[in-house]
Length: 114
Image (cartoon, rainbow, N blue to C red; front, top):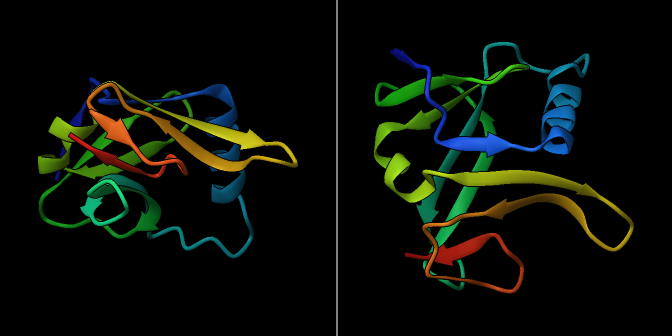
């Protein structure tokens, strides 16, 4: 387990507020951390991961001003410089991803290609 100061991912104020809200839920499992990553799949080839998970051997820990998150060391190449935002509107609700490494994205914004 390794703590790294330089964050590959930026969270907007609205994303940070929503993550803090989720972490503060009474039934939240304190053994889990926020995981940011990618996996194969989706209409463009890769899909973003944003979930609460337990630490794994290949994870790095990153600190923001408000919370920490974990990411598999091998995912940094795909996520470096990415911005995570939270949209709470009626027509668009959920986390969105702005990734400068993506050569294309799908219409829903959760899948990308490099």
